[in-house]
Each structure stands twice: as C-alpha cells, then as structure tokens.
Length: 85
Image 1: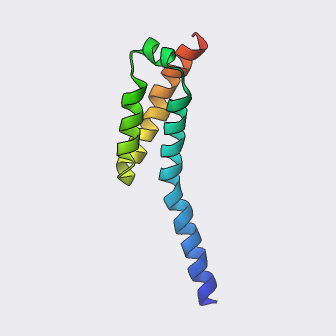
Image 2: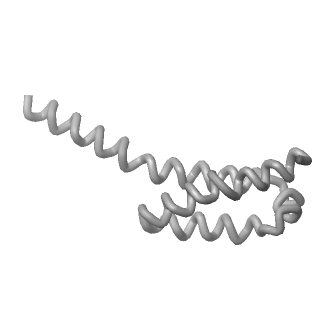
C-alpha cells in the first residue's frame, strides 16, 4: 500500500509541476504563430515577447507571471489586430 501512495503523490506532484511548463509553452507557441504584421499593428515586437517568455521560464514564478500576462493581455490585442478589429 505504501508504494501505491508514493506513486500517487509522485503523479500528483508531476501534474502540478507541469502546469507552469504548459502555460509557458502555450504562450510561446501562440506568440510564434501570430503574423508579424499583427504584432506591428499593436506596436509590439514578437521577438521580444518570445525571448521574455523563454527566459522567464527559467523560474517557475517568473514563467507563470509572464505567460499569464501575455495570455491575458497581449494575446488579445494581437489577435484583435489579426482579425481586423
């Protein structure tokens, strides 16, 4: 029974640890797929945001903060510019 509990805790910890990595990858892939002209219309630079997202991933808190900021604020502006709104 002890091995099953240890395995359960290990799986739970791995799932929780995967959340910051998943958010960072989502933000990075979303930034990469947006066209450069949409970024230019918002006055932002795609390369800068991709570098910031990648380097912030070196720390869990920084990666979460930058990824959430990108996904909640910047992504909407670039998507709106891309759709012509």
